[in-house]
Length: 242
Image (tube, rainbow, N blue to C red; front, side):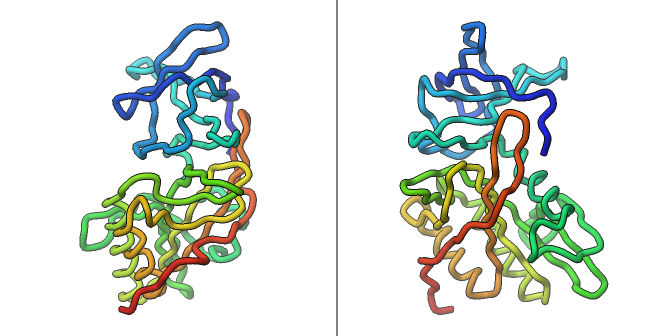
């Protein structure tokens, strides 16, 4: 994903009221920009650290810009604009980068499905291969030694999505949970059972039911964000008896 114009550098000050962030721009001015990330952003909020933001030319927007990249507590870059992962994954699938998701004739976004009134991020369809439901999650929680985790806060919505994916498996379709890891230096990924044990338990059940799990790390800079390579994930996931 090319970013045009390039992201603008700033110094991160604070995030507050969930959707607001104050940053110091290149001219030394404090400006308030939008924070699209609704999670806790644990280990991503480092006052005085480098960050990058985009500006909008939409005159109707309340805030002129959006927080895009931040520096984690360990000095890595993290992509915190949650509107980007779906586009990143779609772009990677369209280019044939993801081996497990190749050879589908059609791809649609935000398709309504399931018994709990959900929308699937990406629906892949093919006359021979059938349907593949792809749920995309953005990963920004960095731990130590290249380990990253999801979620960074309790996510009842994420748990609902896992139930929906399991239901699609029961109907005879493929279902894929795709972790878009927007953290430079990420080497492996786990589920954050300490943060949301219900999500962890449901994910284990989903894997046992046949939901596939993929994790890919993104390369991040002010001019481009692209998925780079797959990383190992969920090796230590405990699968309960069904």
